[in-house]
Image 1 (cartoon, rainbow, N blue to C red):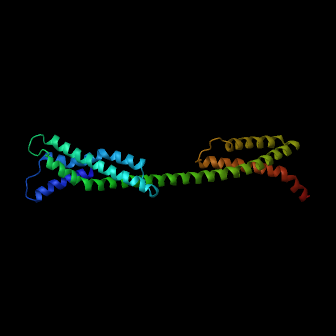
Image 2: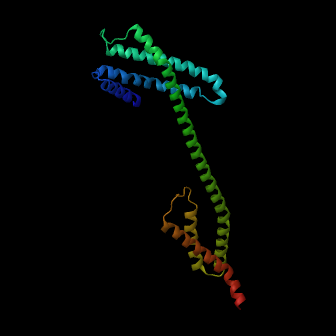
Length: 238
């Protein structure tokens, strides 16, 4: 669309600055429409670029193929332009002649090859950009998974120690006959384990939820510490 609009604008301005009458609308339509014809060929260029990539190790094999494809694309482009002119100018005036068709083909040939390889380079640039972005996303995902794995490993190390200490504290409380404290500690421990052992923990937690979790953890830890170490401190004070 960009080259089509620029070519149409150029044809109009060249006529106005040359003190010539404004171009025929059909002439402007042919000038811009010829560029749009190459837009129809662009998907084929993208397909060939992906099917036969111009990479260093494949340059000798795929380079001649793309050169032949560029020549074929130029023939299609020139033929489409001639057909478009014939449709826009069916009468004798302005209709394409044999001389015009031959001249148009050889005019399109070098320029069309350059446009073909420019589009080919654009497709390669898009491909490498997409690959780089995908690689960056994969690296970020792997880093995140590694961090989560390390955190899970740390949790697996901490949970058994905390659970064993809490159960030992409950045992001490029951042995001493302090059933109220044991019951309260079991309730806190149950709520704490329910929060920890979620199968799909949320990535973002509300501050109130996190503070409540810390409160239960500290309450359980404090009860365990008092039940296990309280008698020892009492004995040392005596």
